[in-house]
Image (cartoon, rainbow, N blue to C red):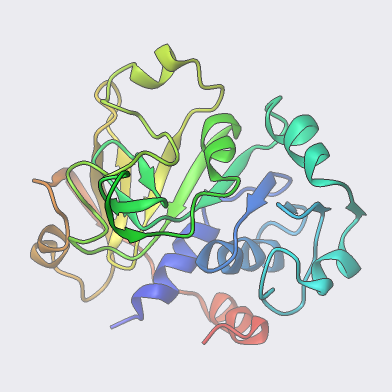
Length: 246
């Protein structure tokens, strides 16, 4: 059976097209973006929140402020320029996000577990994710799937998905299309046109439908033509090793 994290990275990378401007986070999203740039999308422009545009790291960065990002970037600009000029006017095609919680309409929580006034857990916070979720052309979410993370309703909406479904996002006035793809260590979910409720469209070799449903905190919708994603190619696997992934 293929490793779930490796499949998530590979499948997320395959969502990127050559030439895309991509806002990248640290962790699995960064692995996926750098894998895409090193394989099928060499002209993908990687943008990190600290101000690096066109970063080309040879190893996975440890943080958005990793010195190699600045050393290999086409340009380094201020954080206000990243957000005010590049992100908010809609100049970035796709943003990668993760979170502690996601619900069936793609809303993300990185703020608290429990009530905001008296939380069970205080999380690190959303950083630039709210602006990414609202303004990027589309959002790809990459996270591990469990009933703790895939909940019926997030405890706090840090980054907007489709709110209550339907046209809620459009009525809020968000520029971007929202989370068009959610990639996990168990499969791939996408919003159903019209309702925008997440639906399972792909699983991985060795992962059963029952396993995915048990790791989801709501009755999961499943595509009639449920697919099994192709495993990593030899080239994808080799590049991941070169990048230092696992």
